[in-house]
Length: 295
Image (cartoon, rainbow, N blue to C red; front, side, top):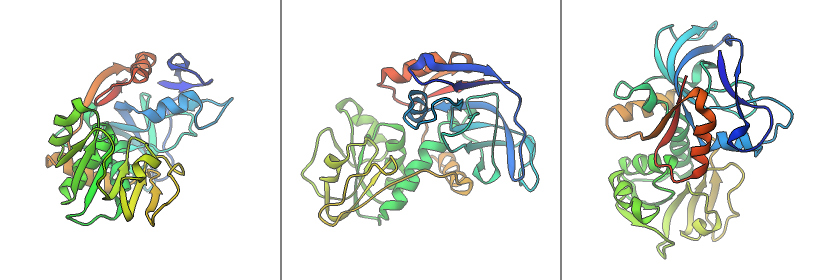
């Protein structure tokens, strides 16, 4: 089978398409025949060496939509089921940017029925990150939340999930994204800093101390890069999410997509063989929606 990997760090040109054996599922694992897999900033980080691993082969791709192709012992899935999944981790020789991928069975959820595979593939990593970051904030209905990077993938899901939970959401993004951010459920919108003291900030734009300043005393801050959150000040509770696979939670998010609570956005679709071009497009910036690879 074909798979996208990096064997040395660099720019988009470092991505290679290689031939490899089709992986076999172990106990409590399933093999998915990939229909679509999303390209995310974390893949660019792996490619550039941000997570280490020099001298080894590293597979690319975290989230996937496709069809169960084989099941290991004690894996409660059936061949032919359409699913989505998160294949977590940077230290892997094969990722979801391949024709087949093996994932733990408890990281898998039934695919949403309202979205095709290309759109469904954009759900796992970013929606789980947003949901788990909101868990850290422990907000109640009526409380106020500022989401930085509200027009991005994680930020957009955070706006939708928080608004659906009755939280008063303000989105921070570029001026041209106001209509989009408000359509996601934000009742407020800003393009710069604000003097308002929010009950919490979900810092999807990774602004760090700048964003922390917008939290009220003894409020809460959640970052999206593990162990990169700013130090606490003024009694603000500070943390950062490290996304984890969770098939049950992913199933809930798929249900919310089917119910219209969540929306998914695809910017462009690339054949797997054009992974270098997809990485180059991601590096250009300004992408609204996700880039998706199709084997």
